Image 1 (tube, rainbow, N blue to C red):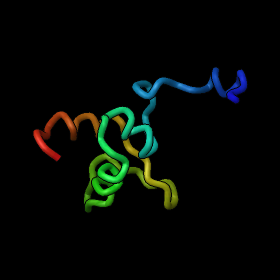
Image 2: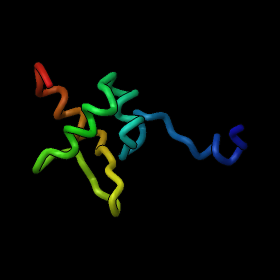
Image 3: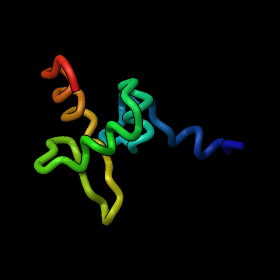
Length: 71
């Protein structure tokens, strides 16, 4: 159950700067495993490490996807 504070603090995915892998998968309709694989690539332009946690930079992710025909 979500309390009122959590509800007031949550942002729509398209307004967030950083996404979890699960949020990025939901946002892009790309599978969690595929996104995780992409984040592991050297010089991935849209990964941000917070300790060992991997987050997706939403804008860079969108630009990466826009520039591709296939992944």
